[in-house]
Image 1 (tube, rainbow, N blue to C red):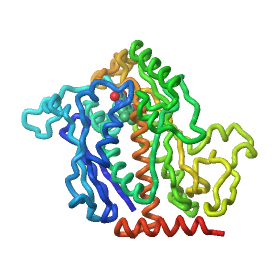
Image 2 (cartoon, rainbow, N blue to C red):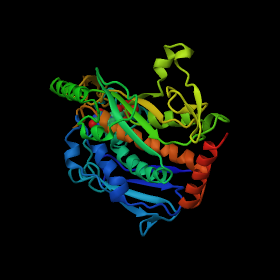
Image 3 (cartoon, helix red, strand yellow):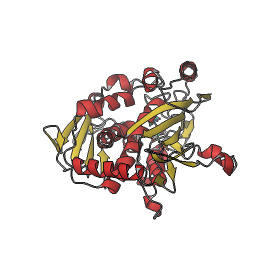
Image 4 (cartoon, rainbow, N blue to C red):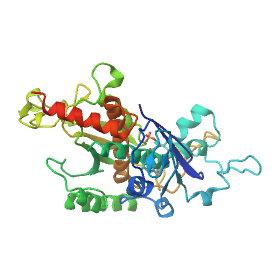
Length: 385
Ligand SMILES: Cc1cc2nc3c(=O)[nH]c(=O)nc-3n(C[C@H](O)[C@H](O)[C@H](O)COP(=O)(O)O)c2cc1C
């Protein structure tokens, strides 16, 4: 139903995203609906100097008139301020172009795989697009998706549960989301938060990097999104693909998946219950709000695992693709830990998949039609019995 495509290089002039399939009549404003999340993506303890240069701001350049979507493709751009420092090596035109080649490929980054794929002699041709700068454009698309979800009462949130060896307990009840945003690592547990900060400082001191785990949740998701009827319509599979497409994400758990794999069935499955006026719910939510690839009325939640950043200030061994000789990897200004920022990207991807699934279920050329179908469905689910 919904599609988005991004374009643009990390140090090119700007990123562009085209969002196609949004209904007409959705109130959309870049300053209100996109920029706050762009800022959250730039934050988090452990980011590198690039974030001091960039102050991401979205500009809507198509698909919106007078503050409302038109039903036509929505285009959004985000300028790269760092482009000024790279306009030579990143120039578009051939005349006078002089590349400063990157040939000492970084272990864990896309450099070598991309060079092998395209036959490039300059890893910059790869890294400029493989770089997670692209995720700013995804967050912009996510802002549009979140506006649509908000129209039917769904909110997507995230927090950080682990940075390297330092872990906080997963949420069990209501989360203090203000405490999440106030924490430098987006972790509401103050004690764990300060240990995470210390761990990032220690990694920086050691010229090393860290990964970790984010918890991402969608609240008030109605039952019935996705389908068990066909493999590619399962909401669990769609969410897993979206999460694993985020650079440096190497694993995703839908609900308490790894814990379930180590437990007996009696300790795992969510028992249904019925409540007058509320309808059918569950006594627990270990399944992450998804059963049979369909949302089951509980909070949809996932644990997203990020590997450590691959660009190291004290580089690992590598090879020079120009000579084949052993050497140390290239270093380029880089982050130490991006889990707090990656969690914001994961929110955007979860919002995107849910907006797509909601449009599939409720349809509508206009937001009013979409909203009315969603309300009718919520009422029908409440009064099923
Ligand atoms: C928000 C964010 C920022 C990132 N910043 C960096 C960075 O500064 N340096 C780096 O080497 N990798 C960074 N990464 C990870 C790389 O983009 C990623 O490891 C690389 O593209 C290879 O893809 P893969 O790890 O999924 O295999 C970042 C990832 C995210 C989500």
